[in-house]
Image 1 (tube, each protein chain N blue to C red):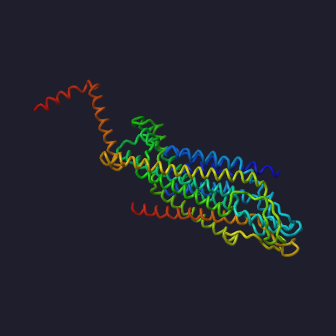
Image 2 (tube, each protein chain N blue to C red; image 1 turned 60 degrees about the vertical axis):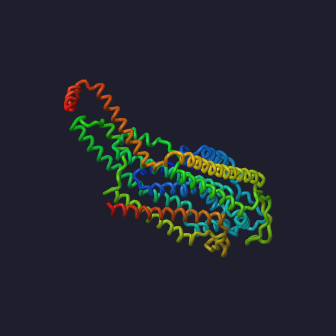
Amino acid sequence: TPLAPPAETDLESKMNWGTFYAVISGVNRHSTGIGRIWLSVIFIFRILVLVVAAESVWGDEKSAFICNTQQPGCNSVCYDQFFPISHIRLWALQVILVSTPALLVAMHVAHRRHIDKKILKRMGRGSPKELENVKNQKFQITGALWWTYMISIIFRLLFEVAFLYIFYLIYPGFKMVRLVKCDSYPCPNTVDCFVSRPTEKTIFTVFMLAASGVCVLLNLAEVAYLIGRACRRYFAGSENESNPAWISQRMSSYRQNEINQLIADHSLKSKFGVAKKAPTEREDRCSAF
Amino acid sequence: MSWPALYAQLVGANRHSTSLGKIWLSVLFIFRVMVLMVAAETVWGDEQSDFVCNTLQPGCENVCYDQFFPVSHIRLWCLQLVFVAAPTLLVSMYVAYRNHGDKKKLLQISSRTGFLSSKSPEEELEALKRRRLPITGPLWWTYFISVVAKLLIEVGFMYALYVVYDGFQMPRLVQCDQWPCPNLVDCFISRPTEKTIFTVFMATASSICMVLNGAELAYLVTKAITR
């Protein structure tokens, strides 16, 4: 039956966006607050609306595109001339490409965790508990991670603006016309062709463009916030001594932890080691000479 | 097609990949599988029902469609993705085989020497399952062969697509005179521009994956030589 396939593909496409959401929202832990708002806007106002509403509005875009002629092939050719790429596909590609730079941050964090684990193993503290701690650690957005994050936001902005521009090139104006006039071969002369659901399409186009605009503003705000934070840190940090690289910081903090651990172990042993009193007395006697 | 199930399988094999392998997997799933499922399948959805020929002769449309589209782009891409993902499973199978051998050895040793080691046997088995094998020796060869296989499969499918469809562009109009069409009839393809755009997109993503595979081969060879 003609009704069965659309329901299947709808479910499958929801499943795929769900998997995509799982992959992208993993980056959420290392984002700023504005970054998390941006992610929610992307998922709720763009992907969800796309899947739940917009796809059904554009579902019959070709089957209900009717030209005032019986010439076979005229419908196809005129549709292809006026809609080189459907709005839905453009928005889906836009959302996919705009969300992908966030994975750059995830890769950087994974790389750092890998190096942390290597350092731990080299210092001989590769117990599963310690490795779990490394996995759940939240990194501060400083140094190289700040640059990765900044680059990912700039790419997001670039992709967003590029897609808005491409949209403007292909469909100048956000209004969907009711009627287009077409005279490509094999249409016998200039025929009227009617677009299906033009007003509903206009409403959704305006909505998606507004959501894009909001995302662009959020990205700009995040850039400004990151730059402001970096400046504040630089001016506050220039009063203290200069910060060494994070790796040497990490190693020195581990060494300090080791020293603390040794002291704690030693103090515990001296409390409970009743049998060991004799050697220490002998040592004291020896050290007296 | 249950892509999430394939994803779950490949992510498991991901632990033993190089970083380039992990990037390759992300590119594969986001730019190829996702785009295929979410966008491309709807574009090709009506490819046969909207293939219209300028004739009333029954059977002419079926025959002409079959002549110009022996296998649909979507099916070719699905097959390409399935075949390209398969060599990674070779690596998982090798790792599972190694783990099995090591588990047997561990059980033999612990049964012979008793519980002299500091960790319990269950902990050791868990550590064995979760460890990450270094890419040396037979694992290096398995991994190398899997990457070479991936590269060859990608090249093979791209070439097949190019040969079957005479390039990556989809024409608007094809002319067909197979029986039972009465004479040379015009047949019109639905959404040719959108199909061309997606064909170029998928070809680009495929090339990026090929470049990543080539880089991974170079990295593996360099690592082996420096060792």
